[in-house]
Length: 198
Image: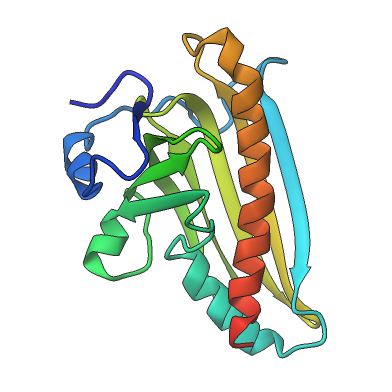
């Protein structure tokens, strides 16, 4: 049975996380693309060009492989298990992802689940969108897209989210801080990984 929001554990405990991938398989989605929202929602948009001046074809191939395996965040921020990870393949719509998110500097980690709802895997574009489930303290969607350009690879991130209504009010400020920190560190980490062999 899935938790009502998010499962908190002491850092490093409760593994292996793929047990939650099975136990929370039926967790319903808490967001539908395009649904009505109000001013309690946060929208974040980032655009970043990776590898200006380097071979776009080589960079894009590496970036697409990393992104469609969800190799985006540094392990200090988040680790994950997934259907596609289990099967050693790229993601596809319908896959589920369990995230283990660090709550630094507190030695607590949150376990959440998202569902992949769309995937793009084309010659010059690759990306995906996932949405939250009831096994998550947030509601919303997160999208990542890379596009091959004449000069490098363009990364675009879009996130729409809000904490669940029952989420403790006093923790909402920290949750938002942690979310924006994760976005920044994820973009930095992903960009460095793309360029590592580029």
